[in-house]
Amino acid sequence: MKRKWMLGISMLALALVVSACGSSNGGSGNAAPSGSAASSAGAEASSGGDPVTISVFQLKVEIADQFDAMIEEFEKEYPNIKVKAETVGGGTGYMDALKARFAAGEGPDIFNNGGVSEMQLWKEHLADLSGEPWVGHLLEGTGDGMTDTDGKLYGMPMNMEGYGYLYNKDLFEQAGIVELPTTLTELKAAAQKLQDAGITPFANGFAEWWIIGSHFTNVAFGYQEDPAGFIEQVNSGAATIPDNALLKELQGLMDTTIQYGNDNPLTTDYNTQVTLFASGQAAMLQQGNWVESMVYEINPDLNMGILPMPINDGDASGKIVAGVPNNWAVNKNSPNLEAAKTFLNWMVSSEAGQRYMTEEFGFIPAFDNIATDKLSQTSQDIVAYSKEGKTIPMIWTSWPDGANKEFASSMQQYSAGQIGWDQVLNQMQASWNKLK
Image (cartoon, rainbow, N blue to C red; front, side, top):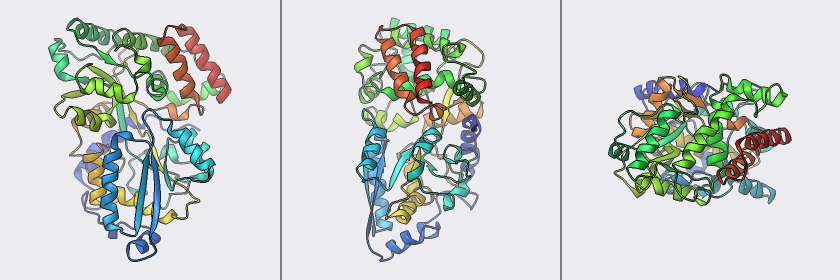
């Protein structure tokens, strides 16, 4: 089933153009919980029904503290609904932990789902959210990843994100870099200038499978002329990974980051990677707008922007990756199903929930009733890339389940000098064949 994988271009632009002008219902941030069409069970709980506790199992370590603070705001308005949140992410395997929870009969009420392949994997646990009041405010295409062939919607987009190379503008200026790189040759030249100035160009966190196996590898798939079509061809055998020109060219970007990167990238985890960048020990970081809260906690004055991840010198190379990275799903067997739906609706319809989404989490909203005028500079840069048509999609959610971890293993072996690039591509193909 072919999805709208190029939606990142249009929907992010819509996020700025549409929602900056206010909600279609008369302005953003004005919808009080009492008027948000919250579920009846949730409303009953807030007005004196039996107290309930809902569990949220989420993977965004960057917003863990802010998420807890938002829960306090929710509980003030819904005193009989308590929310217990647990965050598992960063250096830990969220999916493995979630599987363990369900296997033990302790499935959470609300959890994260990446969509497409992951939606099918968890379909038996997913509640139908098609009738929720927020559905009418989804920006075009943002629900595609959680809409099944039956036409039902099984998840609420968490946000929209974009990633590439975050860069320290002051360090670039210190190294004399005036023109920002948009091609692979220009990126190498910028890295050399940084190194000549005594600055480590890249902070690489290759200890994390998702950084190298999902986000990095995604670039070669996203740059395909028809990303979804290419994946269909690999599935059918009409195309192969080792024979694809862009996957071959991905080696150049990998070699550049290794050559100009920090020491010991294979033992550098997510937190260490972000710290290297935030503390000014490295000039570039392969991450996206989700790291801003972590970066600014370390260095509130860091002046940063975002660069493309080019794999060649072609005209179409200078793009960032953008799309819906994850979704909120509800456990259909939860005894607190309606209260869980109430919490999700409150997050995107209440003034407090919307404020946390944009100002505290730094999220680019996937809804037309949430204003974007207070987005961070990095998020605004991502929207600008999208308006200019300079984005490629997050396509890893349509890979076979588990492929990204195996891709990461191959990439890690390459970065350690244990195998060549031909072997990387052959191993990726073998993994795909095994898991598809």
